Image 1: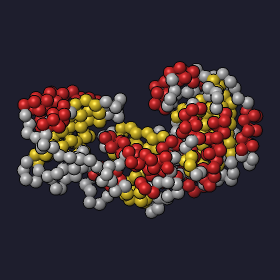
Image 2: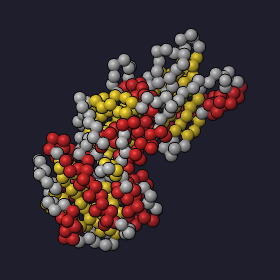
Image 3: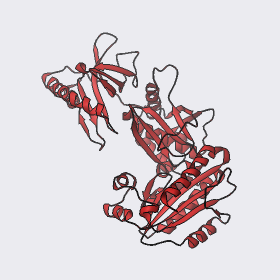
Image 4: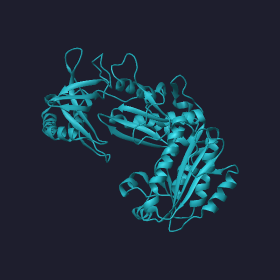
Amino acid sequence: MKYLFFCFLLLNSYGILAQHSLETEAVLSEFGLYTMDQQLDEATMKKELKTIFPEIKFVDEPPKGNIDGTMAYVEAISDVSIDYPVHTMEYLSYFADGFSKTKKEELIASKNAFICVFYYQRKNAFTHSKKLFDWVYKKIKNTKYVVYDGEVRAYFSSETWKKNRIDAWENGLPNALKLLMLHTYRDTEYCRSITLGMQRLGLPDLVIEDSPCLNATNASQLLMIIAQLLVEGKRIENESLVVHLDAIKNSEFQRVIPSIVFENAKKKATIAFKTSIPMQEGDPMNTIHKVDFDAKGYDNTQAYENEIYTNLFGAEDAITHVNHNKEIEAASERAKQRLPALKRLFNKGLDTESLLLKAPFTTDEGGNEWMWIEVIRWKDETIEGILQNDPYYIKNLKSGAKVTVQQADVFDYILYKADGTMEGNETGKLIQKYGN
């Protein structure tokens, strides 16, 4: 069977299960074992799986409609480059955690693999997933084999598989932080974050759309928290779920919570959803629930999104009073000289970078309060953005609001780069030095 035909088989089965997964109780899980120069025997593999799942049926095509038991498609591959090719070295740099350059090169050059696609009922999702993880680990332990987890589209060594699949379980339930993958990417003006890996657990994947890219960390945290609550038995009812950080049971996940909240965090918020939204290209082929930030009393979804994050995680924002001395004004002038280049960079198209600009906003008493905005549109001299601060002296303006400023009024900038570094905010350091 050629690779393209296998993809068609897999996509076809995904299409069936994604469309009806919650109605038909159908669950799917895909693995690929890259065994380098060693070819696995199909008959032996089937025998092993039969001991784990005595009722298993082996199929040559995806099941249609309801699944009344456990089924599997298995195939030995002797020409990986054609029938089951490895992703590129660039892809592996993101989705092959812990792999050395040599190991990545060996993986790409591997000749043999073994494809496994399992179908089972939703009621068995957790037990079957755990058994499959254990079986895979038994096959790869003390070998150079590499596992491709098709549900999260990532590669694992025996060490990382043990860490993220074997050690992820507590009291029969997994830790979503280890089991899932989360993709965040720029989608036009905003960023989009989506989970991968809930399909095999019989649960919907989750997405946040139209989110300021600077909120990527908060968005990722919220999605993982919701996923963990669903894993632990909470259910989205009437398109709503009460998210309480203290309700998470998994002890390892719970130990992470103090590091992501401030002292003023309420750690609780009611989250609304739009269920069964259409898939976009690249989405997991599963039922997808979208976090819905459209709420009455808020001018835009980004403002309510910020409110949710503030309730759950708290916030740390302070105002600094300072007179703009010559040193600060000189630093601001240097920042202004950089604006034409930043404008070109932004309009060329940012990827995962974020561009912030500091500008004045008129207070209720007629003065200026200087605040940061994340740029979402920059045309001619007019800049539109999402406010990143809660004003102290402007009653009817909140963080997350859409605002407009003029390029001539910009005081400073921050460019958050894809590699985690930042550029700019020279005035900020001086304001901290001379402020209050």
